[in-house]
Length: 194
Ligand SMILES: [Zn+2]
View 1 (cartoon, rainbow, N blue to C red):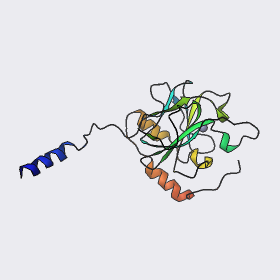
View 2 (cartoon, rainbow, N blue to C red):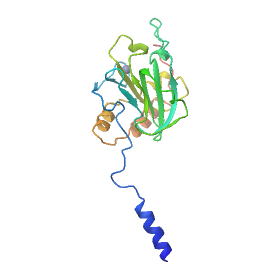
View 3 (cartoon, helix red, strand yellow):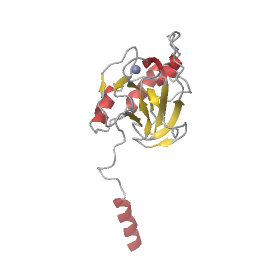
View 4 (cartoon, helix red, strand yellow):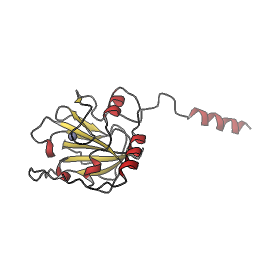
Protein backbone atom coordinates (compact mmCIF):
# COMPACT_ATOMS: atom_id res chain seq x y z
CA UNK A 1 0.00 0.00 0.00
CA UNK A 2 2.75 2.41 0.98
CA UNK A 3 4.63 1.57 -2.19
CA UNK A 4 1.51 2.23 -4.28
CA UNK A 5 1.04 5.62 -2.62
CA UNK A 6 4.65 6.52 -3.27
CA UNK A 7 4.28 5.57 -6.94
CA UNK A 8 1.16 7.72 -7.23
CA UNK A 9 2.91 10.67 -5.59
CA UNK A 10 5.80 10.35 -8.05
CA UNK A 11 3.38 10.16 -10.97
CA UNK A 12 1.65 13.36 -9.98
CA UNK A 13 4.81 15.29 -9.28
CA UNK A 14 6.26 14.58 -12.74
CA UNK A 15 3.30 15.99 -14.68
CA UNK A 16 4.60 19.11 -16.51
CA UNK A 17 3.61 22.37 -14.88
CA UNK A 18 1.96 25.32 -16.60
CA UNK A 19 5.41 26.91 -16.81
CA UNK A 20 6.66 24.26 -19.23
CA UNK A 21 8.80 25.58 -22.10
CA UNK A 22 6.77 26.79 -25.09
CA UNK A 23 6.43 24.43 -28.03
CA UNK A 24 6.98 27.22 -30.58
CA UNK A 25 9.58 29.97 -30.69
CA UNK A 26 10.07 32.91 -33.02
CA UNK A 27 12.55 31.78 -35.74
CA UNK A 28 14.76 34.92 -35.71
CA UNK A 29 15.39 35.59 -32.00
CA UNK A 30 17.23 38.51 -30.39
CA UNK A 31 17.34 40.56 -33.59
CA UNK A 32 15.43 43.55 -34.85
CA UNK A 33 12.99 42.17 -37.42
CA UNK A 34 10.42 43.50 -39.82
CA UNK A 35 7.83 41.48 -41.69
CA UNK A 36 4.61 42.07 -43.54
CA UNK A 37 1.27 40.31 -43.31
CA UNK A 38 1.37 39.40 -47.00
CA UNK A 39 3.83 37.86 -49.48
CA UNK A 40 3.99 38.03 -53.28
CA UNK A 41 2.28 35.26 -55.30
CA UNK A 42 1.80 32.65 -52.55
CA UNK A 43 1.58 32.41 -48.73
CA UNK A 44 4.88 32.84 -46.85
CA UNK A 45 6.63 35.55 -44.82
CA UNK A 46 9.81 37.46 -45.57
CA UNK A 47 11.39 38.33 -42.23
CA UNK A 48 13.81 41.21 -42.75
CA UNK A 49 16.75 41.23 -40.36
CA UNK A 50 20.44 42.11 -40.36
CA UNK A 51 22.69 39.69 -42.22
CA UNK A 52 24.15 37.26 -39.72
CA UNK A 53 21.11 37.16 -37.44
CA UNK A 54 20.24 33.61 -36.48
CA UNK A 55 17.51 31.42 -37.96
CA UNK A 56 16.47 28.87 -35.33
CA UNK A 57 14.10 25.90 -35.31
CA UNK A 58 10.61 27.26 -34.53
CA UNK A 59 9.74 23.97 -32.85
CA UNK A 60 11.35 20.62 -32.05
CA UNK A 61 11.64 18.09 -34.86
CA UNK A 62 14.02 16.59 -37.39
CA UNK A 63 16.04 18.25 -40.16
CA UNK A 64 14.54 17.42 -43.56
CA UNK A 65 16.31 19.11 -46.51
CA UNK A 66 19.54 21.14 -46.44
CA UNK A 67 20.84 23.07 -49.44
CA UNK A 68 24.33 24.54 -49.03
CA UNK A 69 24.96 25.66 -52.61
CA UNK A 70 23.57 28.75 -54.30
CA UNK A 71 22.97 27.92 -57.99
CA UNK A 72 20.38 30.64 -58.68
CA UNK A 73 20.68 32.57 -61.96
CA UNK A 74 18.20 34.80 -63.69
CA UNK A 75 17.35 33.91 -66.33
CA UNK A 76 16.28 31.12 -66.04
CA UNK A 77 15.18 31.85 -62.39
CA UNK A 78 14.32 28.19 -61.79
CA UNK A 79 11.94 27.63 -58.89
CA UNK A 80 14.14 24.99 -57.31
CA UNK A 81 17.11 27.39 -57.12
CA UNK A 82 15.30 30.45 -55.75
CA UNK A 83 15.82 29.67 -52.06
CA UNK A 84 19.61 29.66 -52.30
CA UNK A 85 20.96 28.23 -49.05
CA UNK A 86 18.05 26.73 -47.16
CA UNK A 87 17.02 24.39 -44.37
CA UNK A 88 13.71 22.70 -43.69
CA UNK A 89 12.67 20.74 -40.65
CA UNK A 90 9.69 18.50 -39.99
CA UNK A 91 8.31 19.46 -36.60
CA UNK A 92 7.10 16.97 -34.02
CA UNK A 93 3.71 18.47 -34.92
CA UNK A 94 4.04 16.98 -38.44
CA UNK A 95 4.37 20.42 -40.07
CA UNK A 96 7.32 21.38 -42.28
CA UNK A 97 9.10 24.68 -41.57
CA UNK A 98 11.37 26.14 -44.24
CA UNK A 99 13.87 28.99 -44.09
CA UNK A 100 15.79 30.23 -47.12
CA UNK A 101 18.16 32.91 -48.54
CA UNK A 102 20.55 31.93 -45.73
CA UNK A 103 24.14 33.18 -45.68
CA UNK A 104 25.49 30.10 -43.93
CA UNK A 105 24.39 26.81 -42.38
CA UNK A 106 26.25 25.09 -39.51
CA UNK A 107 27.97 21.83 -40.53
CA UNK A 108 26.08 20.03 -37.77
CA UNK A 109 22.78 20.65 -39.57
CA UNK A 110 22.22 17.67 -41.84
CA UNK A 111 19.09 15.74 -42.90
CA UNK A 112 18.02 13.40 -40.11
CA UNK A 113 19.46 15.47 -37.26
CA UNK A 114 17.05 15.81 -34.34
CA UNK A 115 16.62 19.43 -33.25
CA UNK A 116 14.99 21.13 -30.30
CA UNK A 117 13.00 24.37 -30.59
CA UNK A 118 15.52 27.21 -30.74
CA UNK A 119 18.33 25.16 -32.36
CA UNK A 120 20.56 27.28 -34.59
CA UNK A 121 19.91 26.35 -38.24
CA UNK A 122 21.60 29.13 -40.20
CA UNK A 123 22.33 32.82 -40.53
CA UNK A 124 20.17 35.35 -42.35
CA UNK A 125 21.46 36.40 -45.76
CA UNK A 126 20.40 37.13 -49.33
CA UNK A 127 21.26 34.03 -51.34
CA UNK A 128 19.17 32.64 -54.19
CA UNK A 129 16.62 35.01 -55.72
CA UNK A 130 17.20 37.43 -52.81
CA UNK A 131 20.62 38.33 -54.30
CA UNK A 132 21.02 42.10 -54.30
CA UNK A 133 18.04 42.64 -51.97
CA UNK A 134 17.87 43.38 -48.23
CA UNK A 135 18.86 40.31 -46.19
CA UNK A 136 15.80 38.38 -45.07
CA UNK A 137 14.59 34.97 -44.06
CA UNK A 138 11.96 33.57 -46.37
CA UNK A 139 9.85 31.52 -43.98
CA UNK A 140 7.42 28.90 -45.29
CA UNK A 141 4.96 26.58 -43.54
CA UNK A 142 3.71 23.45 -45.33
CA UNK A 143 3.20 19.72 -45.00
CA UNK A 144 6.05 17.29 -45.75
CA UNK A 145 6.41 16.26 -49.40
CA UNK A 146 9.10 14.34 -51.33
CA UNK A 147 12.50 16.08 -51.61
CA UNK A 148 12.81 19.12 -53.89
CA UNK A 149 9.07 19.78 -54.06
CA UNK A 150 9.92 23.48 -53.87
CA UNK A 151 6.43 24.74 -54.77
CA UNK A 152 4.95 23.21 -51.62
CA UNK A 153 8.02 23.62 -49.42
CA UNK A 154 8.15 27.40 -50.02
CA UNK A 155 4.84 27.80 -48.16
CA UNK A 156 1.13 27.02 -48.33
CA UNK A 157 -0.36 28.91 -45.37
CA UNK A 158 0.34 32.46 -44.17
CA UNK A 159 2.82 32.32 -41.27
CA UNK A 160 2.03 35.89 -40.14
CA UNK A 161 -0.34 35.17 -37.25
CA UNK A 162 1.83 32.32 -35.98
CA UNK A 163 4.93 34.50 -36.06
CA UNK A 164 3.07 37.23 -34.16
CA UNK A 165 1.99 34.72 -31.51
CA UNK A 166 5.42 33.12 -31.11
CA UNK A 167 7.08 36.53 -30.93
CA UNK A 168 4.88 37.47 -27.99
CA UNK A 169 5.50 34.15 -26.25
CA UNK A 170 2.17 32.55 -27.19
CA UNK A 171 1.99 28.95 -28.31
CA UNK A 172 -0.11 28.91 -31.49
CA UNK A 173 0.00 25.79 -33.68
CA UNK A 174 -0.46 25.88 -37.47
CA UNK A 175 -1.39 22.17 -37.62
CA UNK A 176 -5.12 22.68 -38.23
CA UNK A 177 -4.65 25.24 -40.97
CA UNK A 178 -1.95 23.17 -42.70
CA UNK A 179 -4.14 20.06 -42.65
CA UNK A 180 -7.11 21.99 -44.03
CA UNK A 181 -4.96 23.34 -46.87
CA UNK A 182 -3.65 19.85 -47.67
CA UNK A 183 -7.24 18.58 -47.88
CA UNK A 184 -8.05 21.40 -50.26
CA UNK A 185 -4.99 21.32 -52.55
CA UNK A 186 -4.25 17.60 -52.36
CA UNK A 187 -1.18 15.81 -51.01
CA UNK A 188 1.02 16.74 -53.95
CA UNK A 189 -0.23 19.67 -56.06
CA UNK A 190 1.33 19.84 -59.52
CA UNK A 191 4.39 22.03 -60.15
CA UNK A 192 3.46 25.55 -61.29
CA UNK A 193 4.70 26.65 -64.71
CA UNK A 194 6.61 29.61 -63.23
ZN1 LIG B 1 9.85 35.24 -49.81
